[in-house]
Length: 520
Image: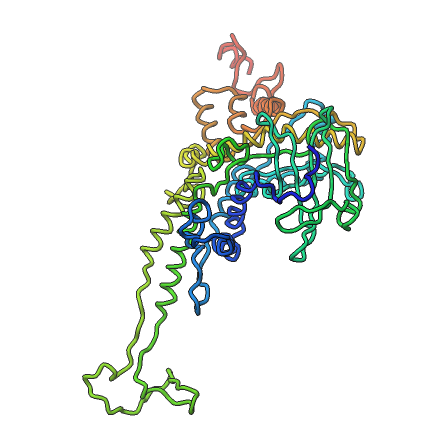
């Protein structure tokens, strides 16, 4: 399928439901109250309908009934408070996946060396952390392979947010993606750069570029890449003669519950939006209690000092002596009254913690991961941590499976572009991927375990080395065993004497003590 046809609605109607859901999740991920208000209120206020949005069904009515969809009363300033729990979820997901980078191993030595160099040049670990945050929020993320010989002498890898891409699937496989970027808008005219990735008849990835001039809701007409300075140096067709697409999609989690059958992943926020909305309402109520509980003084008007005609009156709170007033002693206005309301701390805190726990668990994580469970104190082993956070590590394992598949496709594409464009002698091949343990056992605990096994004569030196260093390969383990054996030999007193030498006070086998004394 070629580039989009001129004059079509944009985005295309068949992609609108998924993009609308991403727009909602993007507002939570961003954490901007203005964007939340715009998503849940302003957009619905302008929606064409004969009935108020609160009484409409479907997505429109659902969004309008939420707390963020309620308008601010006239004459009052907005006091709604937002708690960025959505951003914390995305960061936590990225931390679980990529706190340590996965190890990609190639059979070919030169290819391995070139990959290690590329990973360092690309800042691959940082890119993976960034993409994992976006993936958790929007339900998925795209990684795109490209190059620009004027900028770098190596291939480039960039993160593309899922709400700026229109994927096409066949038999569950990604076969084409259309990306777009808004280059400029004056309120009426919108200039878009459209980039399409697809396969040619030989199965090689090609990239098509075009610039369109349209409106907010219509793609408009193509005007050529040279019509805008940001795309002026882009060819309209790019064919690097590299097999496979130069872009891949990494879902956050499947299946997509909101659109069953869709290949798009589901967000960590999917189903938790009402809870996040309610959590903001709880914290806003808590803040309102604090605001209303400020100490205030109620006093008779006679205590006030006039500031002049039309200027009102004021009271000096530091004044020590007031003139006696002719007020009956039983009158309620006989003195100054302090007004200060109670703050419902315990009720708000308990409700907020319960909501936060449910939000975290709905995303597939353990409350312990986000500090919502009490610690018992003392040293905690990795086994105990895994037991407490089993749900988080299960979710991490599921997400790692999607990343393994994607990296096994992207790594050969990067190496192929490196060979085709930059003529580096590397062999594009599929790597083996090893994920590091998300929790490492404390070295003291491992050493104590090894010492107990050694004392019980229940493990060999090689087994003990593997226990203390679970991340080492066979070559490293063998070398460490050799060094330990050498060190043990140096501390053996007989070995220190050398052949034919004897330590004083010892005797040769078969020699009696008397014979030993007679030689003296």
